[in-house]
Image (tube, rainbow, N blue to C red; front, side, top):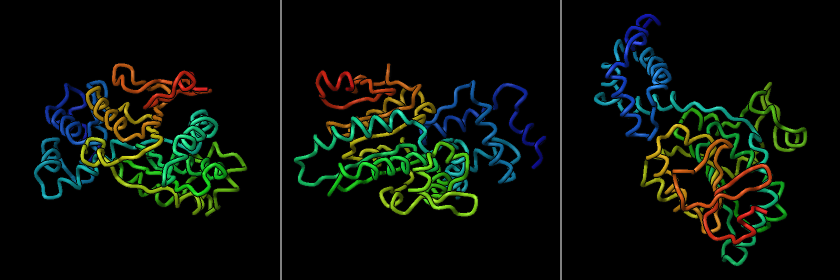
Length: 298
């Protein structure tokens, strides 16, 4: 299928094809990801890639692949893989990590000190290709003196199966590893050709699985979380989908739990159950009463 045929099939030069709107609505219904009119070109581009692969000559024909064909579930996952391509790197949010190391981890250890089972559970929600959960695992290994006899579990989830496969392979190039200090590069990575492999000691604390935020049943079972990282994921959701996801986060966090969003993200107008706290160089949302000290984040 030539580029000219795809261009014509998508109707890029005129008003949006009604079939494209149907695909947009389907993606929203299935995954909660909404493409406003200003971002329909991105959806067009992603559909064009799949149409070329399937040799579909029209959006109507492609919509049938998504809804009527025996392989519709496989194709829907393939389209979602195209839509949810993320960009990240190791140690992307330094201020958040330092806040976890210096303030939040000691608080959680204190809050759970009398629990019969000492377990720290962290959720990287929208983990992309794995750099974030592996970074958290490295930071926690550096703080192992605080976590003696603790079980540490980092749950990493994403909608994109290709990203998850990349994460499980744990091989990264220069772009992903550009922020690594010599200390972390030498302690937690092994060179494999021109790439770096995350050390097994870091990988063993992290489990990867595919999770659709719109799957209420699966989201309900993500219980007992101490810290959630969900950075630059909710930007793809409309207000209704954001509210539903944040409600799940609130329910799944422990009473002392923390939620981190991206630096430019906010729960203003989305949820008023969480309380915003200011940390050195970062902000977080808290479930539970931390008193005046917690309110200042110090």
